[in-house]
Length: 214
Image (cartoon, rainbow, N blue to C red; front, side):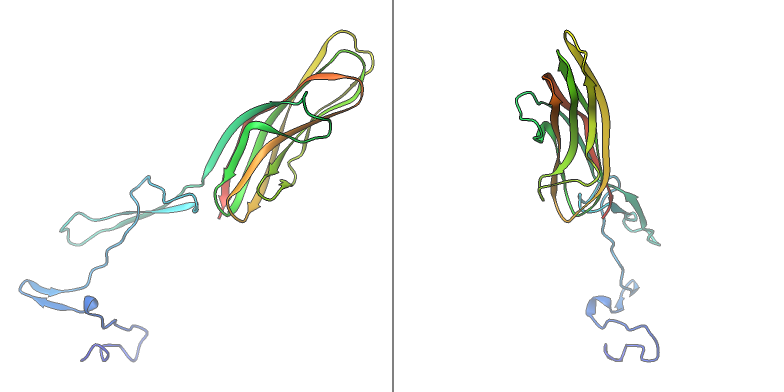
């Protein structure tokens, strides 16, 4: 039969007539086509654009039969950082980036983003509604990451005398879908309805992300 005639007309299987797929006769016997698989070495990731990598281990040279080992493993990309910023030099009700607390979500996908934040504030006379807020902000699209705004500190002290201070912690977390590489950061803000405050600081002790799905 010719290569074209080699097709099995009555079934679902069609033989490719290309020369590399043809049976060949040799002095050692009949040679048949072989498949060669390619992959990455175990423990090596292909990149940040995927959450599952495939490992392929080839058989020893000349082995018969050939045994290929194929496995898959989760490799979700992740990252973390920290930072701090003082707010005394910034106007009230102004969001200020926390220095150092910025990350890049490297590719399209769904991410879990989390910021463990701490705020501090001091005062010497009576104050009303002294507030420290924090949030995660998407720098790429210019918008707050939904459901990440947190009130870290809120207090009133009308009878204050001398120097007083307070610190408090909060955690901001959300699942966040991005369409491509995206820069996110932690921001802090303050305000006071009445009275004078000082030593206003926001820390992002641990700002992190982990990819959940592609």
